[in-house]
Image (cartoon, rainbow, N blue to C red):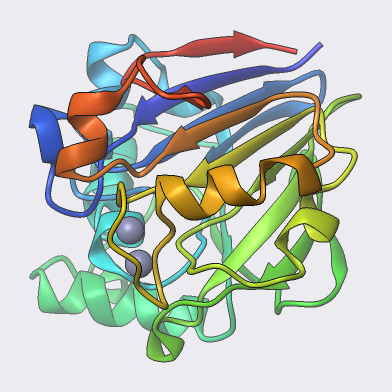
Length: 245
Ligand SMILES: [Zn+2]
Ligand SMILES: [Zn+2]
């Protein structure tokens, strides 16, 4: 049995007063936080998630709403949790340099502190399979701003498989890449407006029959989609939604 807890479900800008998109995957082998934006820490606290249960943070790409919360997660783990066990931070190529640069820019340089726990970095470039902490993952490239090294994942933490689109515009391989997953969590920033680097509801509806997944839930909802949630032909996520697979 796996559980997916939607820590946040908004676009980068907190549309509808919600938190930036992040997921907590709980499986038999452990828990993985998928993306950690600037508002993820508030979400973990509000939802009563103990940071110590998170063995791995898996980043989809280097935009602030997906990895901007990591430096403060680390500090909270050190000062509030007195964490002792390792924390793995996995993501696209350059993950270690990107996180270190971000932490430095925020005034919390990783090198500046003695850590009570090991911080381990792992690159998971698109196009292959990896063991990442408690998860088995496959990474794939998505269609998003290239300088952010955008990726999506298929993730298995014990039995069930969750596919996660990350941020992406439409690309024809998306249904095949997510096929067979028990749950496909797909970004849907927009309602009708079409962009190359974000998905919209109309495009997903057009291709709905091409997807062969047990359940599809839309997240990363922008302003219009925030107002439409719960009223679409495809299920939409809300902060705190808990799905048991
Ligand atoms: Zn985003
Ligand atoms: Zn992005």
